[in-house]
Image 1: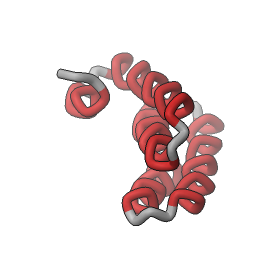
Image 2: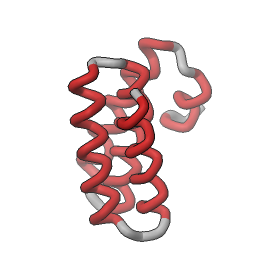
Image 3: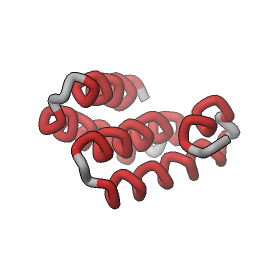
Image 4: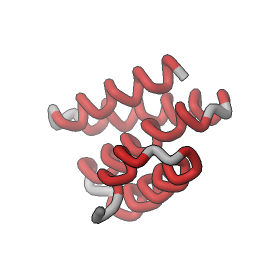
Length: 89
């Protein structure tokens, strides 16, 4: 979980700085690592940040897809605090 989560956070920071190409590169690495690990707790923040990164990049369909994927992982583990960020309430 460690490296995937770390890269996910790095990607979020790059997105907020407007460095969307670098953010997208790093988040894709994080997705691969989280997927390979099979750890649902790694997938939650990774797919959340992947969706946000896609949103900042202007890829709205991809953003929606990844945020829905993130929501599915959050629902499976009852992570209510993150779920609130992904839904209207």
